[in-house]
Amino acid sequence: MPEYITKEELEELKKELEHLKTIKTREIADLIRHAASFGDLKENFAYHEAKEKQGFLHGKILELQEKIRSAQIIEKTKSDKIQIGSDVLVKIEKDEQNLIIVSPSQADPIKGKISNESPIGEAIMGKKAGDKVKINIGGERLDCEILKVE
Image (cartoon, rainbow, N blue to C red; front, side, top):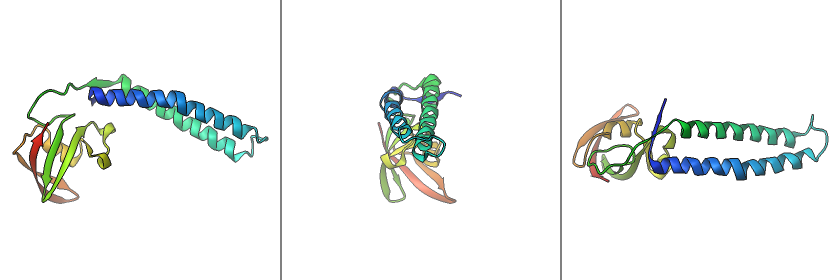
């Protein structure tokens, strides 16, 4: 299934992949060598822990490679309608929030990046500044006004 992302998100994924394949792989290889120097590998907790980290890292690398391979680039166009890549100012009840609409794998609510598939993202996709929508969050229906779309 394709992953819809912006060019910037694709570049971030590629940078992360390169970091994992070079720096992190080297760090874990050093950790394994160091742990192996302690002797008997059967009962060497540090060695087994390092090998487990290596397996996790390998899985993460494969995951990123697949995301990059299946990525479908969304061109951010000058549109007054909200789409993936839009920078949006919304007012939910009485609180204003700056949000960036991203694909599910890029979501990071702490940084204001919300998925187009999240309750808020889903409710505002395709809308424009001045539109008002209801958002269902945790069984509550909240009023949301779109103040600005970039």
